[in-house]
Image (cartoon, rainbow over all chains, first blue to last red; front, top):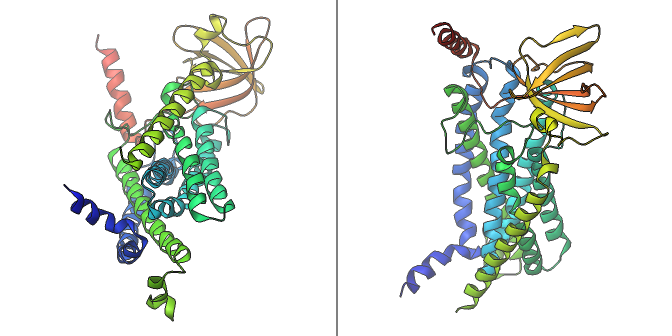
Length: 250
Length: 145
């Protein structure tokens, strides 16, 4: 019945047609990264007021919160690609998952690192084993485990499958990270921004944070698309269409 | 049933199973995951005996006293209170009326000898002017009745 529509939609699931599409999108996402980044950093450093309790040190949230959000969100996207790949056997899914993992790991690492730098002056410690910090550390390990597992298996289709199962099992960790501050006593404070209540943050601070979040969002998309193009070339190197590409021929 | 329907069902079932398992494990570990206990829980005997643990609560207003290098204060959850003694440097955000998490042991007199004091920050971020306005509004509300 809607077989035609389905075929049309699946067109971009083939690496051959996705490769040029991704190439066209990348500059736009880099441009948006720059726009949001400049606006976000401007507000973060020059417009947003000093915090009443924490002084200037609070400005780390402009990196810390967006990277934490991205680390969780990228993992969910990665798990969705992994699930799609397992269910539909599409080739692009595994490549997308593989392309997202290093960026996710970077975000998780930045989140932990900036958090530690904030924690030392504010809490009085770099690290505590509370539920929020520990589950975010597990998220970093899940990313690293996913990357390692995929790299350890030579056959890309089998590597994708093994990685996908790990990614799907790990996805239970994401709600645990998000709700950890509600479910248990943690040193980490509750969410300043949530879907259920108005943000407990001055408006300009919030704008700075949201712009930085958009900046990280666009950066992640741009980098993931660049990486997926490289992965496509690598995995499809034996095909005729790759050999005919201008950038490969020269 | 097409093959990918079957695979999707297996994935969905697997995710549900992992989710339920995780929920059960976390539920069983509930008390161990908590970073600290509250003074009320200590009063109810939920604190571990003879070993170090953490208490979290508010630093009671007016309770902070300095005695050479040792600071004394009271941690409260507004129901129960526990006196704390600590020798060392307090974090910047440590203040009366704010949250804190202290690690240490209870001594024989029911006093908590802390080996580490952490300040707990809340989720509110506001400029100093806004904070003054909030405080004035609160003081005004208190003064009226």
